[in-house]
Image (cartoon, rainbow, N blue to C red; front, side, top):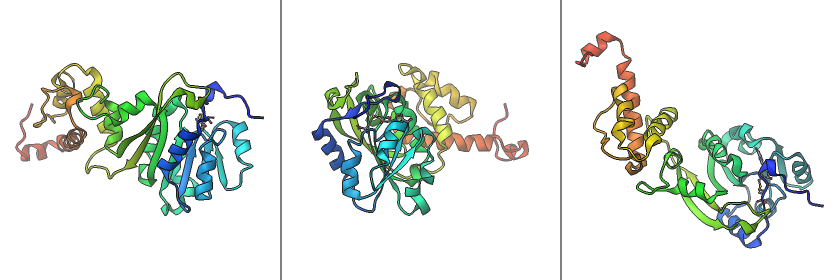
Length: 275
Ligand code: SAH
């Protein structure tokens, strides 16, 4: 008999065959690909994926569910907290020959941490199809000028093409979650040159710390402190600035910080003003 869903693991199992089919078609798995599913649960998406690609790695924290999944031939079951899994070290990624394709109906309570955890292995990943709260997906795909455009949009869009795939109503799950859901496709793109993710994260956090204010009150001061004001227009709100401009700014700040920390003699040599 199927076990009861456990609330602490964010278990909302997909039961709508139409939605399951739509997700599998969006992933369009092919034999030989290195698929990894996060939170397979009772296997709603797992089984149709497995049918199409013959082998699949799944990461499941719930010991009872993991035990059941282990009985299925073709499944490699990793019983672990996904936030502690090193994706680059998974057997499916052995030798780096096959980039990973990630799929998952994520536990919503930790969906954003999972996205940032996956970001650390972005270079080993071919693409990601994940289900999360619709409200989070709206922020992930938001473009500048929209009210949903914020830190999450910038921090994901700088490394992925992010595309909304489909909306999913609560009734598609057992038990139904209290929120609407959506599936998003994420395809990694090359990192912009000279951008340090940590510095970018800091910069974007400062920029969006007071969304309604002009940037000169927040980011402007932060840039001044780093001697990196340059020609960036701070007479705007954070939500008006496109991702590429944040990237260019992050790389400029890194450069200014490097120059600023050069020995005094060199600074004078460059004809810089002294305080
Ligand atoms: N994919 C299934 C289940 C989704 S519910 C379906 O669509 O029906 C979320 C799943 O993630 C559950 O199986 C839950 O046990 C699992 N899970 C929750 N927290 C986890 C974590 N930290 N690491 C790995 N799996 C987790």
